[in-house]
Image 1 (tube, rainbow, N blue to C red):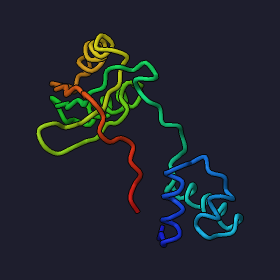
Image 2: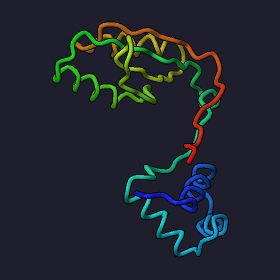
Image 3: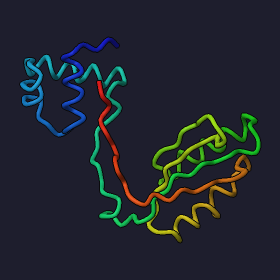
Image 4: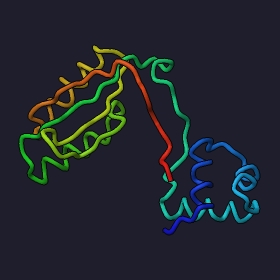
Amino acid sequence: MELDDRDNRLLMALQQDCRISNGDLAQSVGMSASACWRRVRAFEEAGVIEGYGAKLAPEAAGMQFQALVQVQLTRHNPEHLQEFIAAVEKRPEVLDCYATTGQADYQMRVLCRDIGSYNRFLEGFLFRLPAVQSAQTNVILREVKRGAAIAL
């Protein structure tokens, strides 16, 4: 999908405030309300807009432990790899997971109530997956930047 300058402004405005009214959004980018509504729907249908949601403050929601976890796999056979991916996708503690280059095969951002919950996540889940060889935990001490908008 080709994006022009107006599309970029529209998408940036939605990233800043996804609860903005269609009328206010249209006005902010210089479009009619009906044209703006059609364009937003086209972005949704094309997958440019994946969804809408609220940003929660982890600590305010009772989640005190956050870490970046580097996972190395023992085997790269397709069966174990698919099992690992399917299992990780189902775990609510895993906020993000990326296949990466370098020493670690995967990088995950994990959020738990406390260190005990994280230990249960490691021992009761991650280390029980046949594909997992090791995991290195880097505890997040404080957030410097999170959830930034995609610069268009």
